[in-house]
Image (cartoon, rainbow, N blue to C red):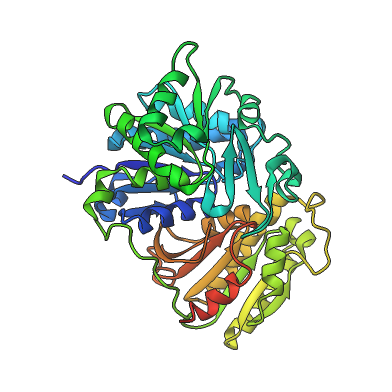
Length: 443
């Protein structure tokens, strides 16, 4: 009988899902990310897993669409007998009542677990995300200045889900989670016993609908993991938040302590690419713009974002031909939807239509020019890009830095199977991340 996974997680976009995959793998856990809810035959082929992930796009869905998306995930969790169901959100919690509602996800998934309350982990320090007394703070880019989220230069102006409220309790109450109790970081900093006492107090009358755990420092995750895993062993639990949920649980899970796959596995180094590399930069983020500007090893193809968003077939064909031509000559290609000196906001564009067009473009290029390594920048672009491929799963290959992992594609199509792909959110990655994708880690 195949061992049961301890954790099943659903990533609300593909970039975040691969970050959690990398987090689990680096903790020595056997992890695999499926691109849709797997059937019994696919699960059998996957073998024994500690962490089973499902990459989705709920972050860009309406509440009704989220219900249809997440019900099969809840059913799979129940059938597998896992202990923790993790709804993986973006580390900035950007969401709204009408799109990507975290509250809507909780309402669907909580029926699958035994605990009547939901655990919410509010920070991810390795990405510069911190939660203090219920309020979320985020760095502007890797190592950048830290802002309260409602004053963040990018997230406060997000074209789809702007973060105009820093208090996550208030933010989530607008999405149908009215009774969120905050457990301060001061409890976690005193260790597991103090945190457990604070949690018991929070769960007393009046009962909390959810408990938000502050995270001010990475060292506090161990206490959070101990407290959550102790409860999950007795009654299954729903946990919401970024990859720090799995980071916390990995310190307490038996699989991690037994060292399966190499406890606290070393970060695999990125090897130089074998052949030309294609990067599709669909993000309008200033962070991605700086990464594009720092990429000297690529031919740049400036995409007509307006025409692609309008699904202009001649624009799609012309861009695909230009990209394939450069790749065929052995050149690396960086295809960008944001031209130099463009306004930072993408409000004038249909962001979802542009992301879908990016997926069509990637699939069209790969159909004529098979590659060994590609990269995609932008959460929605990554989701639609991977969905456009004939692939069924991803496994961890190497670490590309905070918030980005290099993954190996699993596909029944021999031209795609084994291809390496990096997915990263617009705010993620170091300034040289695209150069590293080409040249690897220089010793």
